[in-house]
Figure 1 (cartoon, rainbow, N blue to C red):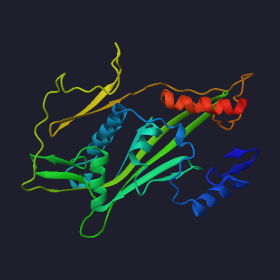
Figure 2: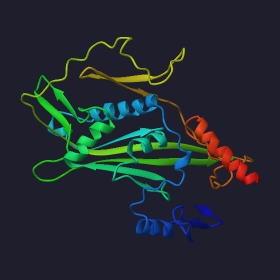
Figure 3: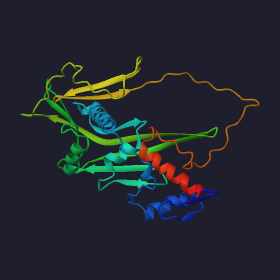
Figure 4: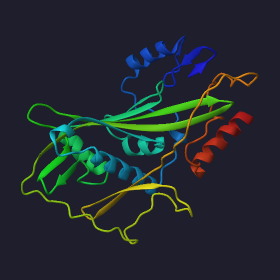
Length: 282
């Protein structure tokens, strides 16, 4: 990417004098790019990790659904600390998947009835896009198509980076944008009343610790149990003038040597890193 005030395109290796020039080049030449230059370094996520974020999508989308005219319209949700490897695993084989190496951003969208059916497979739940209220006999749902137009559900993954005191910190964030609507339902299957979650049905998101400080969001619907753990952090900030304090160095380029994955490395990822080291020593 950046090298002595020069910016390299990771897809075709052309060099540009500024990031804006590189962005224009990517927009013109690699608009529909699906190639991820660092794909080999992304390990295959475990089934448990994939289930965790499938559950998170379902729970957080349903929390945005409502039954009144005030709850319909454009919606947006975000999931912080979302592993890049999970996003790639879920969406990279879709026709609308794209990757921007300059912005370090993945995107994928689903449109119309076909998009709705495909998301049922990706999220592994047929009723992910609707919520019913038996008392008012109304349904809140994600809108894909109506008599006037077709609507889109879009997923984006972006990387937040912080370079400070010779350390590089990384955090992936997913955003999902969609449109909601509501209607009366007639002769539709009403999900059963939430049942008490037993130890037999419980599937922990992460291994339990003696003092597990997690707030667990749960959804019991259609004989399925969905779980999403949420961590909150409260703190107080202040500011002051500094005298004779060390000023953090300017951000430096993040190299493969400095790269620290969000999750522990797997044997496959370690093999790749060892291969790079051997080539350098040769």
